[in-house]
Structures are given as C-alpha cells and as structure tokens.
Length: 214
Image 1: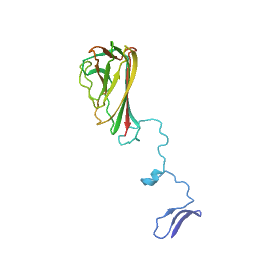
Image 2: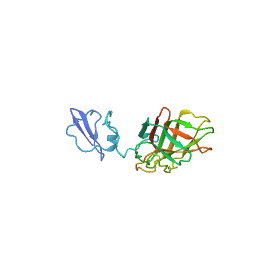
Image 3: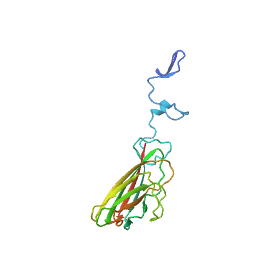
Image 4: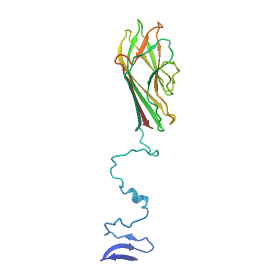
C-alpha cells in the first residue's frame, strides 16, 4: 500500500495488487502533454462536438429513425393542356419528377396535384391514372405504364367541369438505382368519344416525392 501526496494532498492511492487510483482531491488535469487514446467509456462521457450549426449529415453509415424523411424531390409545371382521348391507350403525360435515386431501405411517397377538365357529352368519362417508375418515354407515345405503383381511377361529372384532383402513391424502394416517376393516363368513354384534359384550366400540376426511412 502506498500513497503519493503533494503538500499533504493525495494525488494517487494504491492498495495491494490493485491499480493506482486518483485521489479525490484532484479536480483538474491540464491538457498539455496528455497523449494516447481515451477508453470508450470515457469518450462516451465527453461532449466533444458541442452544438453543430452547419454542414451536412452525409455519411452513408448513418441510420435514421423509422419514419424519418431522408429524401425529397419536386416537379411543378404551368404549361399547356394535355388532352387524352378515348381509345389512345396508355398516354405518357410528360408530367414527371426529375430522376431520383433512393437511398436504401425506404418507402417512396408521391403526392400529385393537377388541374383538370373534361370535354364530354352526354355521359360520364373515366380516366385511370398510373404512376410509372420507369424511364418516362416521349410525350404521347402511348407506352405501357408500369402497374407496380397501382392505378387511381378518376371519373368525371356528367357535364364538363373544371377543377383539380390530388392523388397519392406509396411504394417500396426496391433498389438504389435512379428512376423517374411519371404520370400515365388511359381514358374510357361508353360512347367512344370525349377527352380528359390534365394540367387544364388554370394549367398547373405538381408532384412531391418523399423518401421515408423504414
């Protein structure tokens, strides 16, 4: 057993085969001259960063809580009417988000909002709307839309109307490869006539994409 003192103040104590222990009267250690690595338990009790006020959390090893929004993209247009008549097959409206690469294990929430009108008489017309995950083709090709995200059915009133509608899709991010989420429409009319106009009237459409951590 032995103690190390300075001016009757205990700096270290030691008993038997135990490791030396710092005296309870030691209140401060100057940083100059200290080298080596602190053990994890000591590091965990030290606040080294303080308050972070700038910069990005971009390390790929970061795991965000479930439900956290980890990505965002948007599309806004105020262009011309896009008319889709009966019998044209799946029509690519050209309304699409910019190419987006999911970050990993997440769900993709897409909210789309469109102005619309109908040119029909006298019976109602139905527009079925798909969200495609593939590469958007040239507008008006009638290319097949992916059914992965499911379809939304939008039905007119009996008379031509001007208004707007909102649709939402939630789908899993199956990979981190880039894809383009776009709107395809197919219309049906019992009289084989009529036209559905998206982006009509006030002439605006927008789409918001939120990637949500799972």
